[in-house]
Structures are given as structure tokens and as C-alpha cells.
Image (cartoon, rainbow, N blue to C red; front, side, top):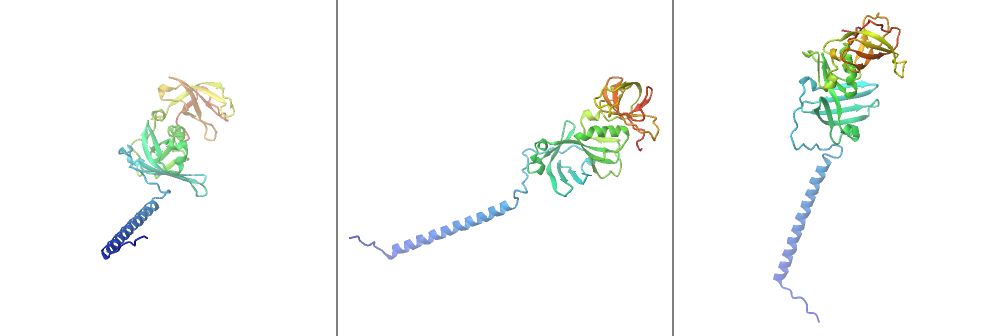
Length: 294
């Protein structure tokens, strides 16, 4: 026969005290867990996946070595597409593009640096456009102050820009422009660009004479029906891809500029489209467009 457990008032009091202490401890743990959960919930709700937190670099960034005029907002609208690049003096930038329907197709933030003469724009992770492998490597371009104008040019726009400057014209219509400067820069042109392109901006027009007119060897003769030899070359500052304009053509006559395809020390070869006016031996050709508005 099992003996009943002996009880005493003292032992019962101890058991009641132990139970009460355990209850208090469990309550404290529950409160702590609840508070921890509330803090965590508030934390994850604040940044959210749509607003990634920028992690600072381990090493400090060097200031972007650009003139004061370069830090601006550059904008362009082409066929209803609006594009804006804001370059800040701390080296950061933002680049947004809105299509004709107002939808954002590019929402890019990152940092800029100078790389071999280029202004290299490197997007950060989390930028909408950084999903493209091309953009992850950065976008190369340059900023230019041309008289009172300020613009951002992509790599693809640089050759055309150099020819326009040599011709005496304003910057191309398709590039991003900032508000014009109140006063023009002391130098006619200030820009960040690699040496290859800097050499294609002339300080003064180059003028030569046609030595020979040749039959074109271009496989597309409609667009390049005339070849010419001119008596100026690399010694005078000419480079492949530069454009030459015929001097002394009547205002009402349509004539296209020629494009240099072969440059030697003291002579060059170029092509131009066939029009009603074809240059003859002895005609002047110049890198400056005589019809450009001064």
C-alpha cells in the first residue's frame, strides 16, 4: 500500500514561492520577446526592399576634380523621352529617364570619377538600370563648357561634337544641356575628354586646297561619290574623321562637307556626297563651315 506524500505548511509555502518566481520569469521573457519583435518589425519596415541602404565605402572617396561649372543638372527631351543627369560636387550623380508615356525606364544613382580622360559614371547596386551588364561597367562621357553652353556628351556623341566646334557651330541638338552660364568661360572650350578626342578640337581653322579629284572607291557611291586630295594633313592638325567644307560656294547651292578617311603628314584624302556642286582642283576646303552662324 502506497504511503501518501507527507505535506507540511513549510513545504507548501516553498512550492508556492517557486511557482510564483517561475511565472514572473516567464512573463519577463515574454515581454522581452515582444519588445524585440516590435523593434525588428519597425526596422525592416523603414528601409524596405524598394529603398536600399547605401553602405559606405571602406576607404574615403576622393573629391571629383572638375571645375565648378560642371556640377549641374543636364536635361534633354527627344521624341517625348525626357532624360536628366544631375552631377553633384561630392561626386555622386543621379540619372533618370521617362518614356513618352511618363514611365520611368532609368532610375540610376551612383558615383562619378575621372578615368583616362573620361567622366565615368558607375551605378550603385539597386539602381533600376544596373540590371544591364553594359551599365554595370559604367557609362563613359564628358562634360563640356563651350562659350556659355554646358552639356554632357556620351562617348557616341563626341566625334560629331568635335566637328561642330571646328565648324563654328553650337553643340548638337541631341545632347543633355544645363542652363547657360551667366558669363562665358575664359577659354572658348573647356572639357573633360580623352587625348584622342582633345586632339580633334582645333584652336584655329585649317584651310587647304584641292590637289586632285578621284573616282570614289566606296561601295555606296550614292552617299560617297566624290573623293578628293587636299594639301594639308597631320602637320596642320588634321585627323581621320574630321570634316572639311568647300569655301566660296554660292549661298543657294547645296553642298555637303567632306570627311577625311586618310591623313598623312602634309596631305589627306577624303570623301563627300555628290551634289549639284562638286569641288574642283584649286578649290579651298576648310574645317570651318562658311555658313555657320557666328
